[in-house]
Length: 147
Image (cartoon, rainbow, N blue to C red; front, side):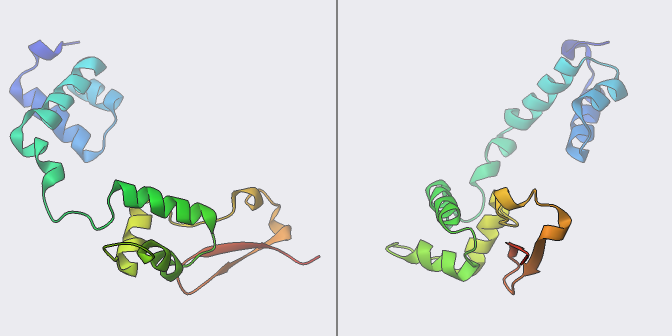
């Protein structure tokens, strides 16, 4: 096993490439034959060390829904889990100085990981006791079956 100071530039490049490709830290350490700590440190130096990578988060236009807006949108979703994207857009635009489109709201929901808004307490029902229906806005609604 080699330490980080013993690695050549080629091996450091292999570490960065393997991790960027989606490999795990342990797989990368076995592939390059070095310690996992060395893999983490090399990748961290590459990720935050260069000026290009430090400016990565500041490129492009500013987001229409910032962190505060995401928290507000999350509260709106928690308040009404069956709301459509249009209803959430209306709630977001109510009293806001800058209005957002329904496409922006839908894109933000996807980025936040809210792809389906199933009710948590009904997800553990046996298969015969629930039915799933899909609305036109790609929202999944779970209802108890009659009976």
